[in-house]
Length: 427
Image 1: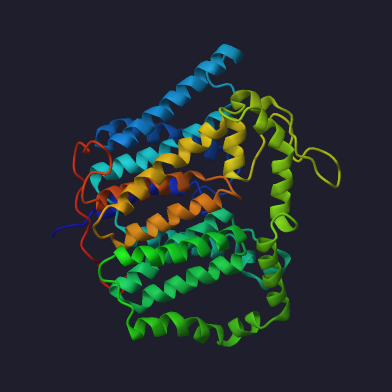
Image 2: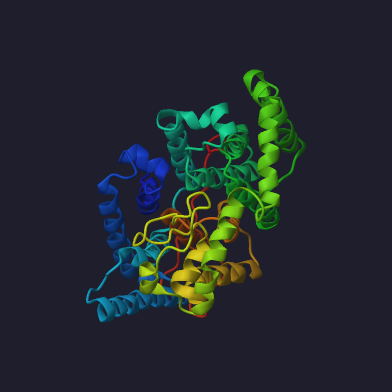
């Protein structure tokens, strides 16, 4: 009997994924547990080793990027030793760079071993999220929590529903399967109900982009049955019993309208206004050092963002500045260089692939749509470790689908062919 062990290819990504609060609470318990700090350090070590071991399987542009990140870490360590007498005086600042190592670990590993089975990955993510909501964050599913904006469920966890939704949509449009479309709408419904407006915007970016990319995906068929399922299923579900009662609740409708208004007026109300004030507080410091940022000195800079109620700093000094925005975080600590260090190469690699002829697998189209929406997501939130790993998976999938090498030099070893299609009714 032949045993299929391809699910083991999920290991590296899952090791990073469990750092997300939804999985951390299931695996380790409270997020503040000291074991999580040790796990993060272990993950950095594993990621560094995997990146170095698999560097010869990377494309030339990815190899160069990895070396630049390692050199940046080395330069930061030298700066720390020269100014403070310690090689890593403030791990908070070094973490802005070490978190990138998971990207190269996932990318390099899958360049060498082949892409993971995406259906088991989608199942793992979905089951983990639903278990968390059922066992840990039950209150997040109540109408009162929705009306009071008590999410309880982290934005990075809610974002994972979007990843699963895009996979299932593409599987449905290429291979059919009622279960795929049911899971798609389940995930989209959870995204709306959990009320993270940044994820709403990410979905609004991803879905049209994904539809455009589907033009490159073989086997996509918009048959009458599929169109009817996509259009009628939400209305049928929305008209059933308790769900209809919730959707027709005036308070729920008013809350949805308020959330949409917050998105449309981010500089005047809601959390967008809060972020705008934080940006204004740090704008002079970013302007003072726009190229390389404040780096380690920035950690020692007193917190510049104050509460409007108590006129006290939002956070204590010497705890970091805790920016919500990825762009603001990198601009403050590492300047324009810090932003480009993260986003430039992925943009180049994906654009080069899209300019090449040749089809895209449905999973690759979904991953590209996810990677692209991170550019919008970054306005409101910093990236979590698993999102760096997700970008690594995007780049590995893009490289695997390329008809010719993406970079100037061919990779050392070709990627294994994508797996054969799985049964239609699985997701």
